[in-house]
Image 1 (cartoon, rainbow, N blue to C red):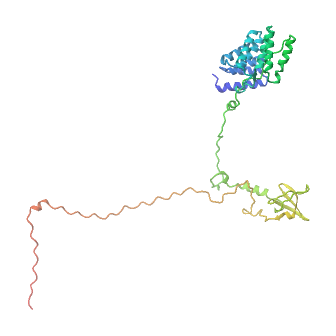
Image 2 (cartoon, rainbow, N blue to C red; image 1 turned 180 degrees about the vertical axis):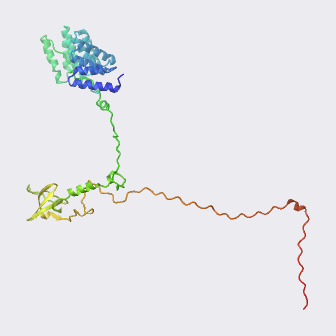
Image 3 (cartoon, one colour; image 1 turned 90 degrees about the horizontal axis):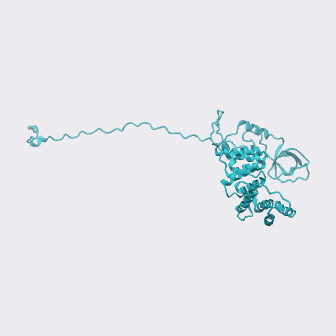
Length: 371
């Protein structure tokens, strides 16, 4: 079973083939769509009408009305197919039904549905009058043409006036038909989203092959390469002495240059109060009173280099370093605890029943002898 994406692709390819006039290719594309909607069936019938396949076209429009019975333009197309097949009564009923589906509106614009066509009520009445004329009903034919003449909108509807003139001469007239390239088209936004889009893009691995490239940060802060600096210095090696413009000068001839205060020019030569200068890739004359010599810093190394504003300055500060984790503290020795004191010996329980011991005897004092 075909997917929705494949059906949309066939629909778009069929419309494109019809725009190129390749109606058979368009018919193959439309008939290749499985389970076609009312819009696809209408397109099939319109392409069959362009190929002259009137009978199959009438069947395709009938299938369209089975899917959507309120499509007034499908009744209009089926009525035209029946009229060309010689089924006048059926064609008359289709035109009358198409007029009823207009619901008294002057026109229906099918642009919102993808069909770039405005079905006007005067066109439906015009074709209805044609069927009446073919059936020999001249009075009804005139009545329909007069009614259509009252509500005509665009200049192409002047065909109604010419039809009334033909009726006065008892001559037939041609029906109004839709262009062969008027088809229901898929929405452009849907067709554009059929192809897969990569919004993020492919990832790129960027690495530096320079050993001394120790900078990490955003791209605008990256140091310019040595080759860029050399090419810039070569571009700035201009001939002449740099001067600053201190007065505006408006040229009075083609040999002079227009300069303004603040511009920097390079003086190649000076004679009789005029300087031959180069400015903005142009060479011309500027009065010497408008210029003031500047210090030439070209070719004086890194500090005197003139840089382009588009080339960013290299970062002068040191790049950020990762945080240094402190060493873990040394393991401390266990705390010294004071020695534990010996606990007193608990008294003996039997000592309470023993007689108290006699106090110890003291030694007698020494004897004193006489002198």
